[in-house]
Image (cartoon, rainbow, N blue to C red; front, side):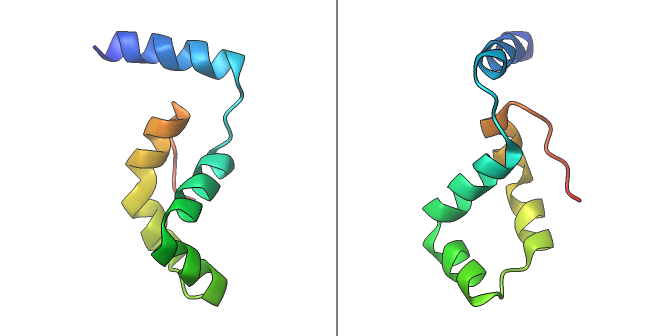
Amino acid sequence: MIVAFDKICNKYYNNCMINISDIVFEIINSDEISLEAVRMGVLNLSAWAKKNQALVSEKSCKQASIG
């Protein structure tokens, strides 16, 4: 199963460069609470990154690291 997923991700990634920052932007924009926290300057970015690391990795087909 993982091999097939990797092949699909590599095929998609090679045809369409996906940036981690684009994925993060998409996720934050789809979550009103996170978006408002960013606007107010009170979002704990480290905690947000830890909470959403798996989702970012899944959507980007890359291993997302916190840092």
